[in-house]
Length: 134
Image (cartoon, rainbow, N blue to C red; front, side):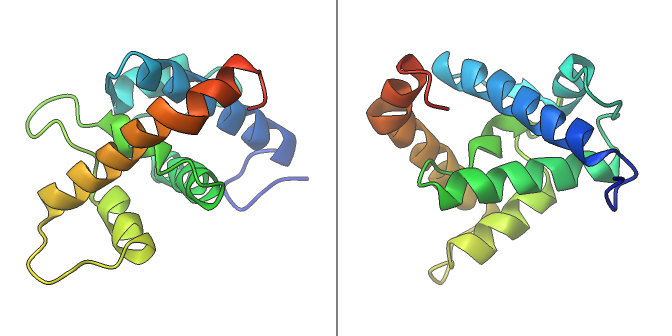
C-alpha cells in the first residue's frame, strides 16, 4: 500500500529505521549531520535534502522518539552551512512538544532539544543500544 508521500508503506518504514540508525550513530559521536549527507545515506527510498517528504520523515521520527522518552533525535540534523541548526520544521515541532516559556528564542529551543538528546544518550539510550533493544 502506498502512503500519502507516494512510497510503499514498507519502504517508508525501512527508511525510518535506516535514518534512526544513522542518527543514533551520529549522536553516539556527539555529532551533527547535514540534511544533504543524511539524504545521501538513505537507501530504502530516494529523498533529496530539501524534499518536503524528508521533513515529514524526520517529523515522524522525532514524534516517535520523543513519545518513547528518548528526546527529539532529529535535533542533530542541521543545515550544511550558515547557522548549522535544524530547519524551521524542527522548531515548530519542538514548540508543540515543549511549550516555550516567555522569551525563549529559536536558538534556545535547539539547545533544549540537543541537551535533551545528549542527556538521553548519556542515560538510558546508550544502554538500550548496547542491548540492541532499539
